[in-house]
Image (cartoon, rainbow over all chains, first blue to last red; front, side, top):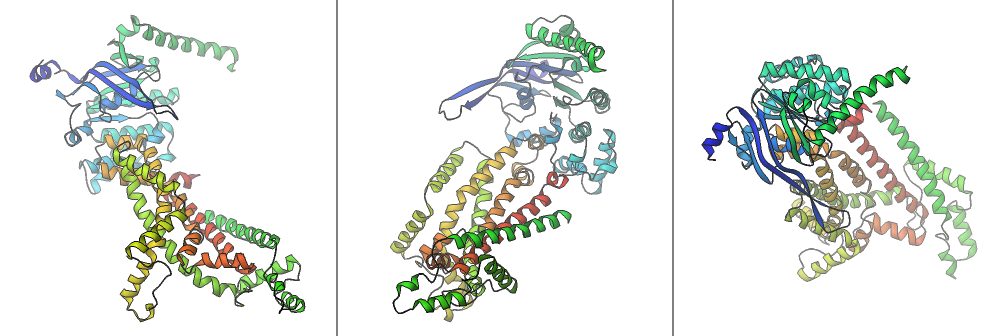
Length: 283
Length: 320
């Protein structure tokens, strides 16, 4: 397929990976012999414009590595990454720089994802300043606007991120991510570790933001019940490969791969276990 | 302020505790300054007994300690048996010379270690990193004495720098710039030795702290925002990696008076090292206690500075 043909074929796709592979070389303690871990093996994934694509799988299945490759934080060993019609996996860092703001990641550990030496406002201002999107007094105004947009009071602008709760920190991380006007926002297990009520609030927020900013989401999670509420498409990862993918209804109602069935079963077991435990002993 | 107040009280108690321990342990050591006099047939035992009484060595230990504390409060630190002058006057000049040496070496070591550690941490596994790590391993394995002797050998062969001492014979007649140059030349061997000894530890600490921080999600997020590599390293990673380095800096300050004793003795630098050696050999007890207490106080001050710097640098510590 020529470059022009590829561009046409992916016209409705915001991002796509083709045959993506990534290995990590490791060494055991006190040993000179190294071994390879196949984090990704021939991963093909398509993220349509304006969709919520969920990437699910057990821990260690390669979800975060795929997110890092898509977020241009890791360079794949083999394969292609297409974004907005261009193959970007082999781009040099200088060429990648203007593309970085368009793909943003919201990380899992909100406490570790925000620099503790910055205030809440500075956390949002920094990328705006670096990318020269705002300057001077407008910089602070824009940071406060973004804080308000994600449900944080601008009065908290001078607070350290350590003074925020887990949910508030994730809101701050989202505000920082949307500050750069991205087209693809990757949530790397961003909602795990939050209680159900906060998770629900966060989901409402991100869906509102998606409409307001015309965003496309890649939602990485091991929690299928969460994914089931918002995803348009679901891809299931297992041992570095995508073993099943398709529209949410198809994957949830008619799972073909054993790994998908196991993940769905674990959700059902958990859902039935909670009411049983509540009636038996929680009172 | 409350934290500083608490830490100051803590430090004062520590100084008092250390002084009691130091004074009593020195007294437990066998022999005294006047024992050697017993071998001299020209000095009678009555004279020695009179000297012991004069210097208060016949008094019980707690009384002697009380007298010493009073002397310290007066700023005299007791009397040297060998020189018959106050310990303070002996220590102050020697400590100044030691500080000239150690402060230069510490400053130079940190000025080299931080940029080098940051630079190699940004390219782990490359030949530059491996070469630096190999070099630091070799330096760590070489004893301080071997290093200083090696440098002295080089100086003998090249005649590039003076072999020992702190100043030339004609130092008094030199102009200010020539005096500075002369001091610099005399500092070359001891400073190089001290820098080569402390550099591997500092470089390795900077590298390890930076490598740990560079994996943190907030650094990955900053990379994702398109922040340039140099800014990422200096504005984001280095401040976040500073905590263990600040503690290490406190230890560097703590070692300013005690870290160069061997080098001073070998290179003939007129600092506390040769004085401590002399005082130990001749059992000049108050000089010994004075030097040890100076090092202890600097150790406590060093850790206090590090603790305060940590509070200023890290909001997490402030919130705790």
